[in-house]
Length: 171
Image (tube, rainbow, N blue to C red; front, side):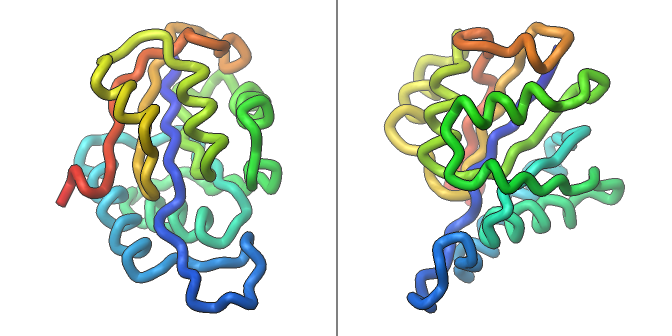
């Protein structure tokens, strides 16, 4: 059994319009949402064996907030290829996860994460699937479960949507 968490980075700042997109930091609202999601993950006992983030500043700041909530946080792997990644690239990254790891959390971007999640979901609560298909807000988390022994076995429609949690759900 493998558990995959997909987390969209928290809300970024547009205050400095001279910054290139990959260098935009989190907005104050983004910092609050990232901390809220980190507390939720810790409170629910959701701790990945592997934590991987896009190299974009807003994704890294989100991932660092998550790590701060776990006393024995996993190392943070930074994958430049996750920035603006298409679902196929995200799936390759997932497939490269060591099979000894039972869980993986990816911090990334839209629309790649949403497209990947919708591609992988084969079962799960219909209402959650519909809500996810409509909109994946910043700092929202998707949990998918796969009845496989290896990460490379994950393919279209093999996952179960276990949860879709938005920061606003936790307020």
